[in-house]
Image (cartoon, rainbow, N blue to C red; front, side):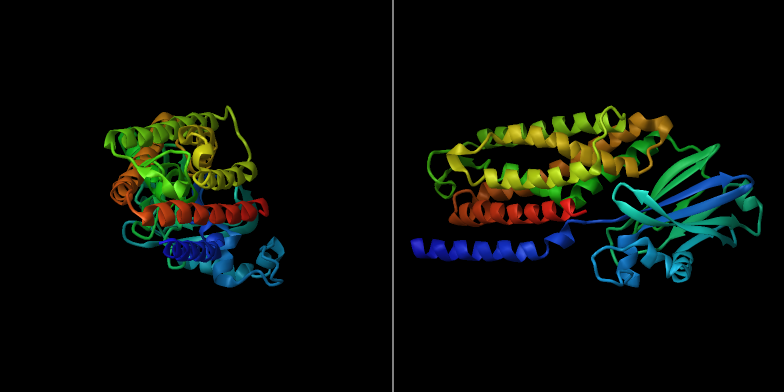
Length: 383
């Protein structure tokens, strides 16, 4: 029996190493571009901001192989980049396509790094397409390279302020559609909250690390020897305590950051989120000396709330409907989180009596998550 357990532990360690090999790819699970439509004098101006990291996937811009894409390396290929951008962006009226006339290409900075920014004026053959608010934007950049990529559109024109999110499933959005209803705003941000928690691998692993011990009874023995919980009610109370603490904590800092009461820099928040993943995973291996998991959920949930806020701010919040957008996003995060719990906990409950659960899921899973978190931490500290 002991020999088989040692073999199992060896396989667990191998899984942890294999998981670490893909960690840097997982550290950036999605990418966003920023699209805006504004009015400049009598012209409608469309702007697209694309991360240099994303452009490097297609154009291999990092010529000196230092792992960073500089503006100098990007500027040398401005012509190619602008042609590529215009092939992936299209504005149409009711019956005809509108022309995009280049204005400028420049560098800009967002919270997660440097972007290429290109601007065009929109010229439509039929003036009624603009006056009658019949324009539509189609966005096809980067979807074939990254199906998690999103184009975040913000329209900021007097009488026509709106926003939309463009994805592989929904690559088109109306422009100049006028003010949108409060219910539409709420629904849209609920969907974005669900989507964000599902693609936020660091948030998911932090939550799972806190839940994995819920079906086991804490004792002075090693974690691999903990007995299974007999009462479903007590296990559910444990899960409820963790999830509630995490929810309350990240809701506090999400609101505080959106209202600009506290605005820590992303360069601090993202590494601390990675650190929270490491500590939550390692805490599972401390046995009797482990900290109460609901306390960890609350303490680090405060930091995760700042991470949620940075995403929400990037989604171009409507100033006049801020409460609806904020409430919808928070509801979406909770629904996404509940779906994760409902997917994980029944399986954990069924496997709680097995050596597989203690050795592979608890011990091996926690080690693998700690390794991933460590590589994320190093990656984020390195910028």
